[in-house]
Picture 1 (spheres, helix red, strand yellow):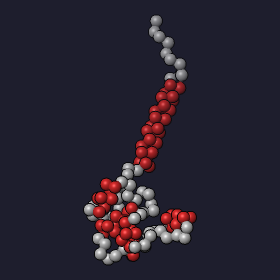
Picture 2 (spheres, rainbow, N blue to C red):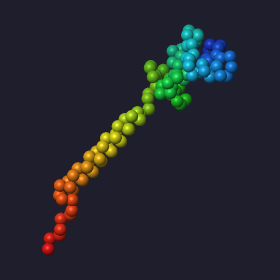
Picture 3 (tube, helix red, strand yellow):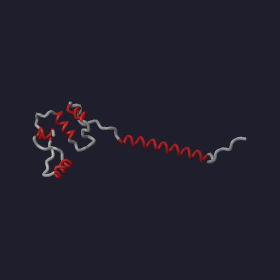
Picture 4 (cartoon, rainbow, N blue to C red):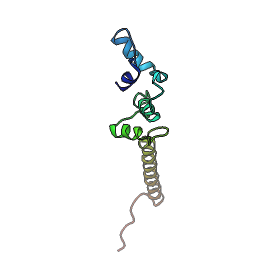
Length: 119
């Protein structure tokens, strides 16, 4: 809505709802239509709010407020990577499997049966 207020045009123009939704999915608004009097912080905030990549898009109004304050020179901070967590889990599972395998090998080397108690 802010884009429309500043430019006097809709951000995504289509003849009907279907073509408008296609524009939303396929195209970026023409930010060159923003007046030259629009501050860089407002321009950057609009770009972040209308970003197609969900990892870069503003998720919370607090982030938009920070962007308006000029706190984001480039992109918003990214959430912690799920890949990093998956690597940690894979390492832990691998370590567990190695431990179980070593214990099994040690048990097999001892003959597989517990030692008889001494008389």
